[in-house]
Amino acid sequence: MLVNDPPATAGEPALFEAEAMTYYGRWTYKYEIAEQKGAAGVLLVHVTDMAGYGWNVVASSWSGDQFSLEGSTAVQPLRMRGWVQQDVAREIAALAGQDLDRLMERARTRDFRPVPLGVEASVLIRNETERMTGWNVVGLVRGSNPERAGEGVLYTAHLDHLGRRAGEGASKRRTSTGWVFEARTRPHPSGKRTRTPSISTIG
Figure 1 (cartoon, rainbow, N blue to C red):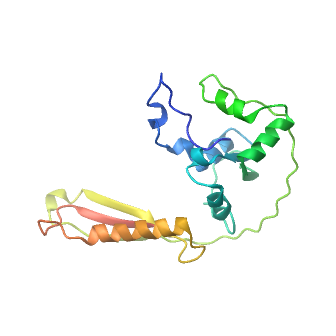
Figure 2 (figure 1 turned 180 degrees about the vertical axis):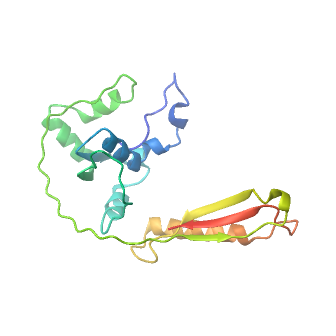
């Protein structure tokens, strides 16, 4: 499966919000829709300009412990999830006598349908699992106008890594979390808070 949305065309310039990636283009959705369709497993094909990040991000993000919420509603949860680089995907397609670049070009049209490759693979994965409890941080500052007590302004940002596996992702998340608190603590020009801003830092 390819990451990102189907591209907009001249006939449909606003398809999937044009250049902006929607949730349907995210790797998380690819796994979710594969489960819904009853797939046994998924290999996502990494293409840098389509994903918006390099292979190093994939390699670092999928190394070490991985976390997921309990209670999958899928009839058949995926037994295997993985990523392959584009060159590897080309080799896999070639085993079936297919050209990956041509398939990707054809996939840009609405009439494209999945092409069975007929390539089989044997996968052995050993996992260790454990249950754990995560946490979120939520702060609430009430406004001064009772007529607008039912309204609010919500700020959110990631709060994770906590100094471990520091890298580009960790740096961006720390920056966004800092921005949330800085934006919230700056006083309003009037000196009053009319709405109730809620600070929610998501773990």
